[in-house]
Image (cartoon, rainbow, N blue to C red; front, side, top):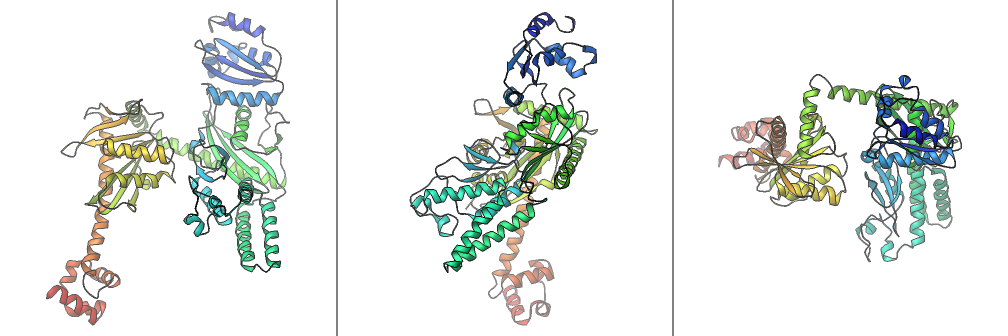
Length: 599
């Protein structure tokens, strides 16, 4: 037992240890303020908890730090090891203890959700704040939207936020059977949603059999158009299944989890396999807190992954056995054969690739210049009271002339430096006239309805533009992205940084013009303004040339394009002789152009 020189509360801890039973359960280490430092599970609570306070010299540096901070111990006895496993997972998510290793927040991963409504909808979301059943997470939005498009071609279901009483345009173009108007019964609609669930669960065979029976019945009754439509659906589903299937369909319901570690981090890959098809696969990074082994980390994250993905698997393929994972909770297969071996190897390749990506990204942000950049971003984080370090900053700006040729530009700064590969241009599509607020709303919604959010969004404008951005992000997209604004003075120089305070009001952040953070923000603002203006000039220039030539009666866009390619500009076209123009576009059109500019 350690002495009071290591932990001054050891006497009360020793008394507490004597009362802990030799039963399965969950224990919590608490500090003097009652905050949970660590949550663990044990087959024998007495033995496991007592082990922390003996053989102190043999413990790792991080466990020694934990032991010195413990003030009290709380235990919960449960009936079985499975109960202990599930309770531990629940408490870790609830308290997020300092010394527990946890998966990264999965809010950036996309899901499909079947809503809990009388007539359910299928929604794409990155936030699990909708009441319904979730499927995923998926590795990226592209894969998920491809699946959503396939489902849309296979089945008709409603997408409207509120149901009216008359069929809408979606019904007229064949995307919805109009249950709102009684054209589809509730039972039929529910059957459609159940078929969608089957696809999301990977149950392709059952739904294929059902579609084939319907096709044969329609053909026998001479309903050939209906039979042809069903045949096309079968072909579409079989094509998608063939691209998803990587092993024999006898591998019916299996989870695959692999892990790689270095001293500070562990990397996990999770694959969900149903009927030989990988329904989804994603990877995650875990920062180690107590020098945990791979087995200890897996024992913690497997229940969380199982719950997070609503997995129904009873078998998990693993690279190493996990002693703390009860076999009656999940059957561990650590030496698979045949197709199961292929799945484990595939998962291992995924986690190796993910580890390299994380290391490469860390190397880029932790090089020789990194300490200075991190300090700058930490200062910006404190100034704006951001929840995390703003490694990824995106900024928008609009550009137009009295509403003509309206465009917008977006720049991204990664680790305080321009990331030009991620710059984006936007043609304004839905706004008539010079309306900067509506233009900003359009581009922000287009950007974040399909792309992962940054750590910080900056709008080049004052309070009005910030409010537009907040309305789109929070109210329409239901995302949580920190928003800041940059305002300029009468001389068009950056003079104010704006943020939302704890009351939701816009406040000015006091920064001196000589502050390095101010210089960074000024650089971001100048860069987005330059990028948007350049794009606007390009578009305006093309439009001006096209208008000047197509104003000539009898000259269309194709001829104007040929002239510009040949002579380079309208001014050069004006200087050409009639013979030169004839050689380019023929004598008849050449006379029209020559007469237009010389008469």
